[in-house]
Length: 277
Image 1: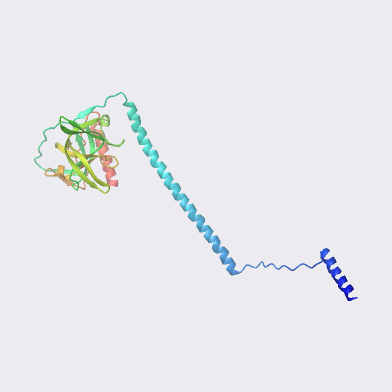
Image 2 (image 1 turned 30 degrees about the vertical axis):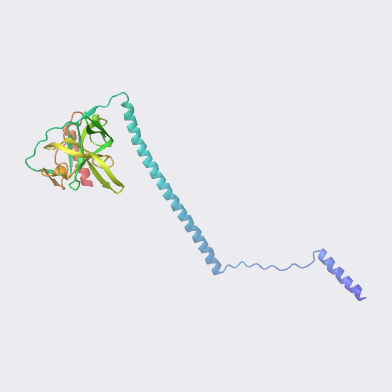
């Protein structure tokens, strides 16, 4: 009898299980957000926002640097294109060679007053250029490129062209002229990048009433404001500097250059630029 009761009980349990009548277990969900969890979520949002801002700032910086590089490349290519056009126009034409020869220099009885910047003329080259007067420099300097040294009659000579920007005031007809002159000596220039040896030439130069031969080192100054630098070897015993003034003496004239009236206007514009600086 007991065995039968046990059998019936087991049968009932099996039926209930097969019929899906077993009561499911209760599941408890908690939707309440604690203060700690809220602060953690807020901190994660702040970190994500800061990371995005940092990434965006870095992206803008990279884009600005890329735009600057593109602008520099465009300007460099534009300058190169202008030079290429000039070279194409000069194809088939023999460049004029200007050879300088020693000329007696004139003596100056009294010292001449010069401004911090002056116009200088080069009669043997037939042009005028802007010059910076600097007593801190020993030897004067002339902006030149395509500098080639060679030998003539057993002496050292140099061949070069003036290195000028397109907007640099000068006689346009001589911009591509080849200039030849004997090398008088060499100077050693000590720079941060190392030591450089430069040839020195002597050219006849005029500045107001002054007319004499001046020694110049040759190096590319086209990236500077003045293609000519006048040092103290030129100033010694003949000139004084008044740094409060500029362009005291008029600009010399040469065939193919601007007239005196245009030169006066240019000088007034230069004075205005100097005052603005």
